[in-house]
Amino acid sequence: SSIWWLPNSENLFLAAHMDGTLIVYDKEKEDAPFVPEQESPDSADVQSGPVSFSVKKSVQSRNQKTNPVAVWKINNQQINCISFSPDGRHLAVVSEDGSLRIIDYLKEQLLDAFTSYYGGLITVTWSPDGRYILTGGQDDLVSIWSFADATLVARCQGHSSWVTDVKFDPWRCDERNYRFGSVGEDCKLLLWDFSVGMLGRPRAMSIKHRGSVTSNAITRKETNSTVGRIRSHSTISEDGEGATNGTDVVHGFRTKASTAMLPPVMSKKIDSHPLSWLEFQEDCIMTACK
Image 1 (cartoon, one colour):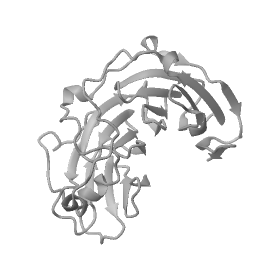
Image 2: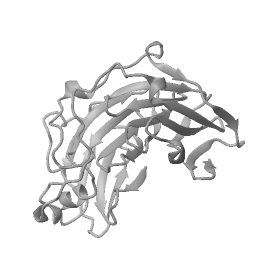
Image 3: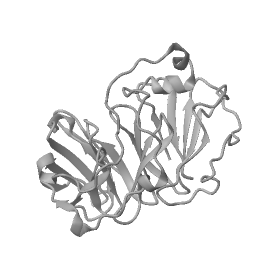
């Protein structure tokens, strides 16, 4: 369904497929028929629930002479969008099944899984400081998630149709205040502001330490391997949190009554066609329509 280059990599890119599979390729390697190398006990039959995640081929596999470099099965439904965290380690994935998954793709580990208010999620992005994640989708809402606290902190209501793209404005974000925009099939561009004080302390607290954003030296042996090449693009040390079991991963649904609801600071219909893309520049906002 779409492709993304791995952060700071000239050769490795990630492809999302409509069958719910994420595949890492190296443009310098030849392709070869793929046969799954391993199956975990829980991944023989991938379910459509938010906790599903299985490694079909690991980045640590000895067979790295040909593509694919790695294969991860997320679910059995279309992956709509992914976004890499600013530190280059974590991956946010949204799917047609309405799930948001946070993956440590260096460890090939599912950290957190959330669900939309209803319907599929279409778009996802990280805040410039990596503290918050935005999603938008078929529930006509923009949702704000706290990465460190692993919880939904606010929903943003203003669109009258599906939300197709969300982006932060990096020139208007600081340690406590954030500006972001959203576009949708209602042909509208909406701008939103929120602050840490406005949201308050999330009720749900994370039970696992995320790790600090610090650089750590990579050994020569590791750097020469494929997994080392992927890890070398991250600014987080290899030493991180321990394994997460399934009961820690899935986070409960939050009702509207238990979640802050934010209004937009600006709402404007800017085209007669549904909008599909949004990007902030220092002196302007760019959009695209279908």
